[in-house]
Image 1 (tube, rainbow, N blue to C red):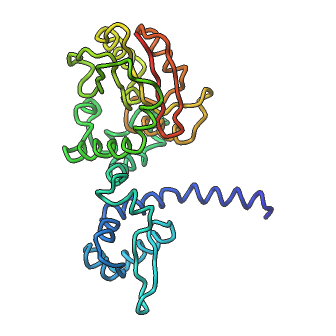
Image 2 (cartoon, rainbow, N blue to C red; image 1 turned 30 degrees about the vertical axis):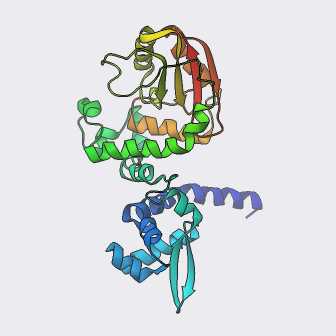
Image 3 (tube, helix red, strand yellow; image 1 turned 45 degrees about the vertical axis):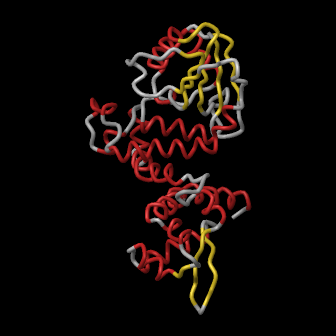
Length: 298
């Protein structure tokens, strides 16, 4: 086998096994592995971890050793036994209570998004989200029952806060927002409820959930409510102009396909939504992170 064929096969295996890696991460968070090791006074062997988590000895040892290979845990040998501790990566991003923890978003991804992604081929074939099929919800009840429980809704909101703690500063620094004294971060039923008057409305990860028609309707409502000279700040992950990258944004867009009725968009596509609503001076800024910013003025 030539080197080029070898590299291609390596990439194929890496892509094909990607779901296994994510499931190791999700399962370790779900079981509380990283929180347990963070609270322990010293590294623990697999038997101690198994006992404290109430998990099987064999499964626990396999999971811990895989986490070591993924650099989520570190292992040392003491008294002839392997003992485990969190790596810096795990301590920073996977432990409950860390100021940079992403645990809640990972739990939501494992419990909800991953289940929907099992139906990706069907979503592509049908051109619509698979949330009802994944969780047995009648299609007509999708947006009244998109969260299967209050716990899931809270987990999703907490997960968004996880991401915002890491991404928020760069997004809000993309533009000088000092000309806007009164800012409203929009949430709730913004299609029907009265909108508060403000100088700037923030739509953070909102428009990517919806069709172009619903986005236009919402933006028209915002334009009417917005003070003269005010504007709207759209926070989303921007696709490249040709729509073929970045990879992370394309994956987010597929996630919108399987879970909602929306998609990620290019800067030109956001301009095409904002202009008919009346907004002008549309500016798009990439932050270098997962989310970018689009500012438009009334």
